[in-house]
Image 1: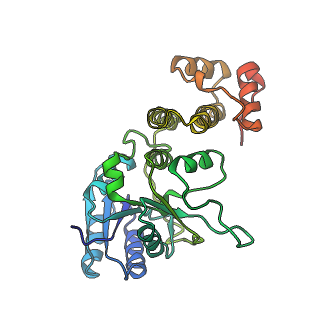
Image 2: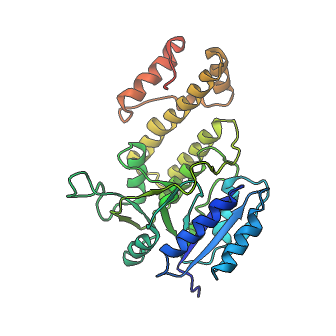
Image 3: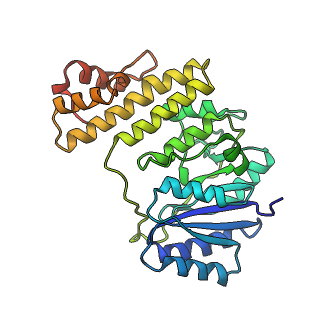
Length: 314
């Protein structure tokens, strides 16, 4: 049985100085739990691998560096999950980290015997939180689509065995929207949910340094990922019409229109986009129902009936 409480998975690409700073800070913040650091190096050329190994050795930490070459971030993160041995896993991006959340998340997820924990700060008056105890994964998916809650992928924690047993992984061929799809994928597998009322505090390790992995210019990768999510939802929750309607008539058309906006901004003609959508069989997802919010419904109507008057959102 593993003695590691939390595995911290950190993707890295030319972030040598940032990685050292992140690991040192997280080590200070997690002194009360057993942690391991798994750094997934994605073809760095700045000597980051050796530097990270030295930091791990100097601080006498449990951890390793795995070189994943030029693979996608999704593939790297899946490797991190597979190689980790902690009971729980969390993901930390070098350029987007938060202060002092891991121990509190660990406390919440173990106390509730949960599979997933995220932050839901108290409302402005401090009297309540935005969700209730006993909330389900599908409840959260619907709330995410309605934008009534927000889940920051770089501040979540999962029970590792839940992810592995359910096959809730990142879509490795997806470089745009892969984190969003992963959260949806995991939530569709009915995790026991816990939440923390912690107000996340962002840390700027180095404002001049960025975590940058080249993503595909194919905006439809995000749509393809959401179509897979919709297919999974129909298989896992075929009787949940609220969930299915929100995915089919709110999420999917919204993502398609986001792609249309991007193409229009890049100079594509309306007629060319129409032909492209038809050829890829994406046009069928530009539809609405009574569950579609009015703003999106209006955009859909304009695009479907008078596309030359459609204007991309800024």
